[in-house]
Amino acid sequence: GEDVEQSLFLSVREGDSSVINCTYTDSSSTYLYWYKQEPGAGLQLLTYIFSNMDMKQDQRLTVLLNKKDKHLSLRIADTQTGDSAIYFCADRSGAGGSYIPTFGRGTSLIVHP
Amino acid sequence: KAGVTQTPRYLIKTRGQQVTLSCSPISGHRSVSWYQQTPGQGLQFLFEYFSETQRNKGNFPGRFSGRQFSNSRSEMNVSTLELGDSALYLCASSSPGQGDANTGELFFGEGSRLTVL
Image (cartoon, rainbow over all chains, first blue to last red; front, top):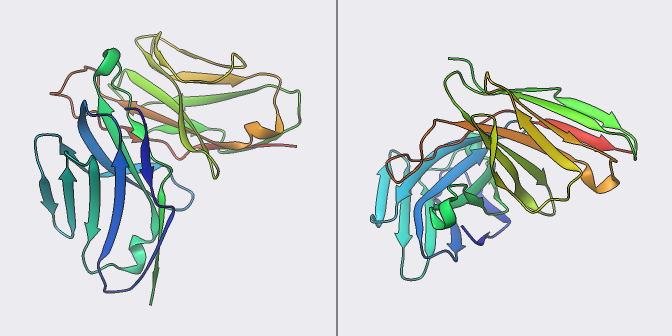
């Protein structure tokens, strides 16, 4: 990957939907990921989408991919306080033989009652 | 199945010292990557080791080095510490193999938090 950008903060009310957005620049990205980091912990893969898909749903999570605009989003339905964490967008391409994902800076999701 | 284990979890050093961090990957995982996480720069890739060889390297100075042992355990070393090296250092392991058939999921440890005074 080359560059991945995402907004730094998002604040939502419990029960609402959260939408975290991400843009990337590498047009050869094959996989795009969403990782979650809870306080004091490492990152954990939430979900991923292959580049030939435009949507993936997994329980409360919906991932939308717009390859033309190089835009990825993560929607969390019925957001709970336990969803408060930092969410990282990442992309991976095979360009140059490197399969190392490039991470965004992370979006801090704050869920308040 | 045990997860990725990093030691130590916390450490405090002074400028000019050196530090060694350790990472034990998930059993069977041969790829180990290291990342530096800071509030200002986010998550930055340091290097990746596979079968005891450095396979990929990020854009960090030569003070940052690493190695991998035959049992896939990895260490990273930072010499001549600077204040700006204060960060959370994360290790991640993944299953062997490259290519689109491998989703490339990374399994992260909890990190080693380094404070340089």
